[in-house]
Image 1 (tube, rainbow, N blue to C red):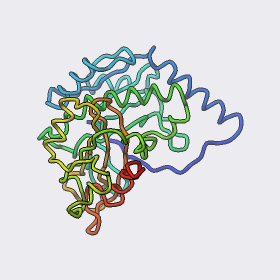
Image 2: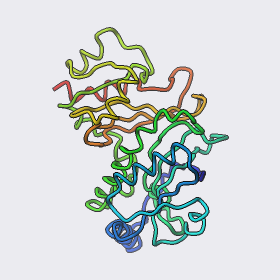
Image 3: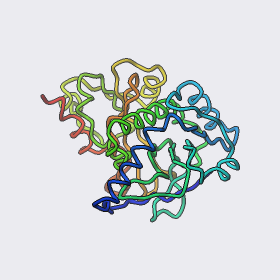
Length: 283
């Protein structure tokens, strides 16, 4: 499996003619996305690769696609005629080893970085802890296929979103109001007071089990949003966990945050996260 280092960049786009040219080229890249082949990299016949193959066969509609091996990817990865969809093990600079597996979309060709934009990391969605053999989160892959395609559609309408990547989804909680919100108690980093969730969400959220979250996802439960938690391998302190809100029927990503795990801040939705998500329900 391909490894990559996720870097937090704070550079800004160079102003002037060069910046305008880069933006124009980026817009053209995504406008022509449907005319290029997306290579779906399947290194093996393991369960995750089988699930990815099935999800693409059933749900990929934005461009022609072909499946390929890791060997073919290595030969074609510098070819700008292709985009590549693949599972990768990712790690941050401070990590000694990969902690989380992602589903990522990249563009072929030499890497181009400008500000927070990288054609090698157009969008990264955390699936599960690295080397997880249980497949507990594989039910997310079909939803991720739709999220990635919708991300491309959004960029085609507004190229500035290309430079935001997954951070664009950090705060869309206003769109949760009016839907049934299911919060897995196992996904909270704290124990809420007895009526806290009911009070914050005015009776429009339920504390449920992790299994009920999976059932809602698998059954595309209507008008429902669920919490998703992706923890790093070993649940190790200093590594990131990811917290998402996903529409089970709309396949929208409505909340996307992360934090470093520590003794004082374990993995899971924090009290601050829950209060932020509840704000639209207050009015």
